[in-house]
Image (cartoon, rainbow, N blue to C red; front, side, top):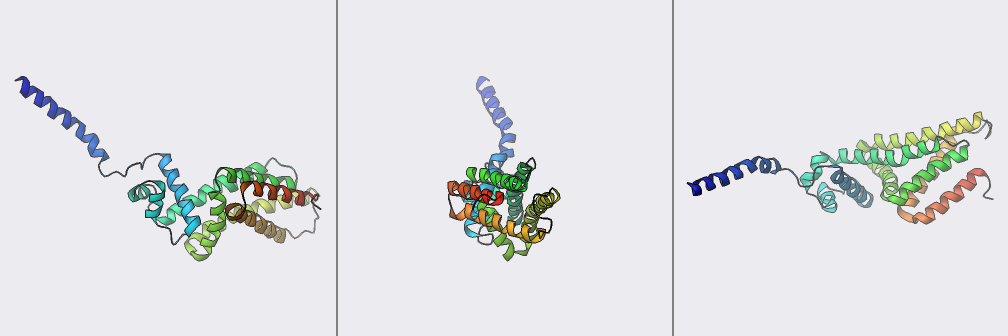
Length: 223
């Protein structure tokens, strides 16, 4: 009887543990929680920067993130959805952060400088953001499905610059006859060039020096 009861208890313990095992069966390992999602985003951002949208696969992203292919699919069903998430992440970390940083600044040069300084702070933590912002515009020119988000990201920066220029005109800081649309596009070109430089050319220390000299240019004290 004791032996029989012992076997019954053992079978009951195995039976009670089966539901927990069944829940785990088929679920991609490490697919839960923000840490896995962030690893996927970071790895995807690096690979898209290196190889472009078309040549990057979910399998490569999973390998670099140290996850399985199903784990990536658990968070992002398509490559386009993953790319969209990277756009949103870059917008929040760089563009929106820069605009918020510039909100308290008074002058035009101070607003533009505050925007760039916020971007350099992000660059000091993770250069893949600057690379992605620059590289994603090239990807968007090749893939129409990406164009809307890329243009939207530029439009956010364009709106910020235009507003800052109009405020400077209203306050008498700059000439009233300035061509606001043309100057806006010029500044977008300069900032995009800085993003390209930050991501692929110079070091973070060199970028800080470039931004400092650009601030002097805006203030009229460079020459």
